[in-house]
Image (cartoon, rainbow, N blue to C red; front, side, top):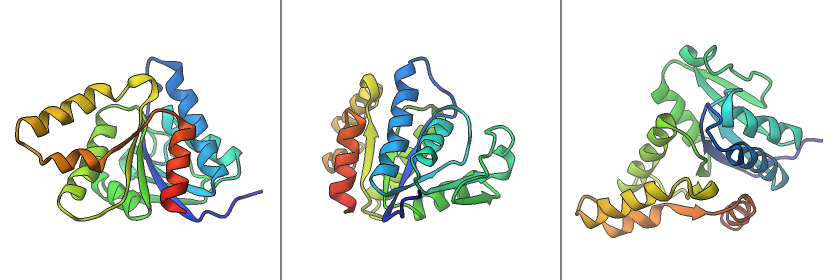
Length: 186
C-alpha cells in the first residue's frame, strides 16, 4: 500500500556503489525510512549504484518517488521509469533545479563529483539567501569527515562566514536522520 507523502526529501548520492558495502546498506535504509515516515523521495531517477538502491527500497516500502534525469544520462544511469513521477530534462542544470524545487529538504549520501556538485550548489544558494531548506550529510562510516574538515578550513581561511557551517547538519545514522527529518518537516 502506498503511503501519501506529506513532504519531499531530495537525495544526492552516487551512481556507483563505492568501496564499502555500508554505503548501499545506508541507501536502502534511507529509502525505506523515507517511505516509512511518509516522505517522498526526490532523486536523480537512475537505477544504478546508491541511487537505484535508495529508490528500490523506497518503492518496496510503498513510498512515493520523484525522479529527474537529463536525456543524455537516461541510458548511462539506466533511467528508472516506474516512479510515481518521472521527469526528463534537457540539461544537468535543469535536473538539479527540478529536484531542488520539488523538495523540502536535501540529504547527501556518499557519492563522487556529481554528488559534491549538487551539494555545493544548494549550499551556495543557501549562503546567498536563496533558500532556507535544511541540508543533511548522512555520514556513513565517517565518509564526510574530510569534507567537514575542508569546510572548516574555508571558514578559517576567510572564504566563508562561520555561519556557513550551520547550513549543513551531520547525521551519523539513518534512524537519526529520519528523526531529524520528521522533526523538521512534520
